[in-house]
Image 1 (tube, rainbow, N blue to C red):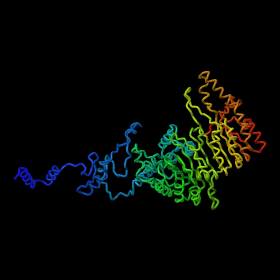
Image 2: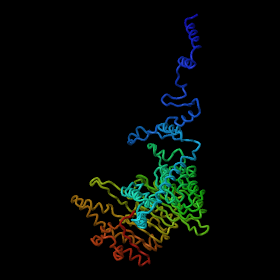
Image 3: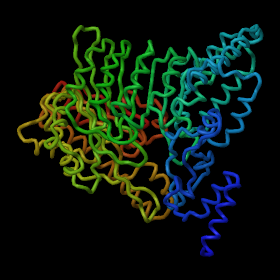
Length: 622
């Protein structure tokens, strides 16, 4: 017998007396190694696991695959995130972070723990009931004798004043120091005396604001309750911020935790939700959750990313049929010009709804051109009344170097935009200033576009305004009043005969007055340049008055009944000599007499045509 065979035979004989586990190891050693045959990757452990008893298997499955809580929580620079991007955590894996394993084991081994006694229906239900228990504890404190040394009537009046001055949402959105100081002050006031707690709590808990959606911290916070009226939630998960992801439960629909939160805060009247997704499936649980609010009056839905599908959103609201809803507002980062008439009519059956608003929201440094605001209204007291369009507001970035027809999607290329323009009762154009850096002074310069460029931008829009009664120009450069004459030439035999009210918010010349003050004593060249601009402003002011007067009651606006011109207070100090006196600079000193001396050409023309003229002087124009 060959030597190899005799060796194999003797080895087989010895195996018969070996332990089964030892035999398995020996067999594995003789097998040829092939990584592809393994049920898992060596660098990523995985695969099914089954223990001797079912309880161990079920418990271990909570933590598999292993999930590291520390992943993605450390702050990183933009360069680090670009070079080594963190993949979004897969919450659908249902894995519990392994760091919690010992904590859960200690709970299960507690002799007082009986899983059969647990009555929580869900995670949200648990946090909500925690908040209710904390409220019960505070109620005992609030029931103690009142403070006899300080009248509660005075405290309530002080809190009423603070309620009018403090905007909770603005404070948290902008992280203003003075606002956060007021919040800390109110929190300290709750600790002064037990009798103060209930009154201060009603102010602190009037508005819920959360940048992490209906987070567990909100559900269990006893400061919120039946006295809470406003709800502002932002669903803003960040893949580089683990705790943000955990708080909004990104693998759950937007309605996750929202149902539980609303069940606890039943008296909410105003709801503002910033949603990441606005599809049919994303809106359905949100709209269903809001149905539980019997006092709901105002709903604002904001789409932070992507284009808001207005018909889809309006259809979802229509299906929900909120009986008490009075105002619906949709905020968007971009909008498509589409036929909204059918979608708006779908809201007619909401008996209490009286206004529908669409608003553009500016994000970061994005420059927006085109439709910015739309509004519809009706009188709910009139049976069978339908919504009619009121306002259409348009942003005009006349300083853009890109071709206007390409950037604006002008009416002749957008059927939806034409319908909006034809039905709006008020048309407003807001001019976006073109800002350039000045190399010589290191400051910003605001350049005024020429009249022909302004008219080229807005004339195609005005040509479609067949129903408008009011025309508004916001931040209109007063030096370019000749624009109206150019518009008339382009419109030809189609003047704006239906316009009855014209409002012009006039802005300053190329450089703001604050710039003049900053460089008054820089050098002789700068001083001469500044003085020349002041003289130009003083010369141009009456010329623009005369040019505008020629368009009133004839020309472009033959049917005008009211003219309102708004000036900046500090700009008039530069343009009009008599407004530069020390006495005139005092707030409120410019009464009716001073206003009557402004715009003499327009005043004379309005008097001849029986047109009302109003001149308003403001400290600032938004």
